[in-house]
Length: 373
Ligand SMILES: [Mg+2]
Image (cartoon, rainbow, N blue to C red; front, side, top):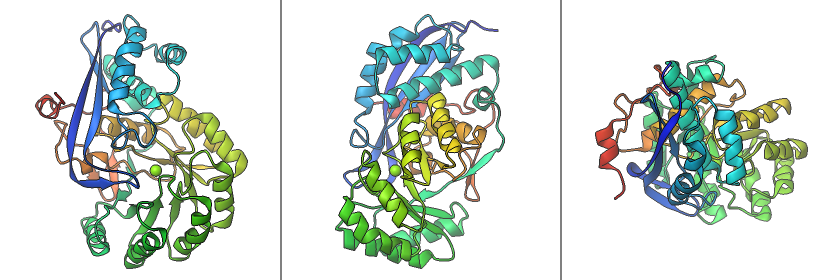
């Protein structure tokens, strides 16, 4: 086998334009920043990971700029000279150097998995115990255009058999207007496709108590994180009140967070992002706690590019606990392809890429074109 020791780590910030603006309650983005982390071994093998947050630091405090500083200043010294098959030890040592910063740690964890798998000439899912499925369902996030345009976008996705389930962001508008907007979309798609809503923790308890029952009555399938992440008692109250599943996202970053959600009955489903959890190993621990408590898990996204998305696909295909579908649509929002061979989406699903490592190869010309100067 080739020399597994880590000889260099390179970080690059990309700004990749999107096909249309992607709106959240507090911000909108028309390009997605990505921190690309490349870990190279003495044998000349390079593995990649992505540090990605949805648009900026509003979601969890990290951004590509903070991730680049954390990786270069604090994580690289832990990595150099170690072997790429020492992931457990490396990640334990990293915990002693940097608290939190899970998005940055995820980029390193995934680059290590990609590099190690490439050294062994096996796919990343083999390192996770093997894939037990080769594709997963993908929900599409609809934009924030006027209602008629949103419905037309959804119908186009259904007719082209790309997606059969949709997510709408809420929380940016006046709650009554926002609720009415979502109910119109849900009604128009009734019988054809399900609609879920994500508030990114922007409603307060009373607003949620007043308006969420209308959404449930109107046929919305799932309520994602209506209220602030740390207010688990409020989430538990809403979960007890509502006849449809509640999903925790901002409330769960760690296995212990998942344990608290389970203890309090705060949600039926946990949104597991390999990014926010700090990589593939930590994500597994979150899913294990959820499964032990009988909770479902959704393969969620931070709008990763193709490397981060491929990592999450390997994870979802190797982890039976990801049993509530995925939203691994990130690359479909990008107007530029960063891979030599794009990820394959069809019939409402994304397919597990084949080949060593993450099974995807970057197009270095495209990477250079979108590298931030
Ligand atoms: Mg969310």
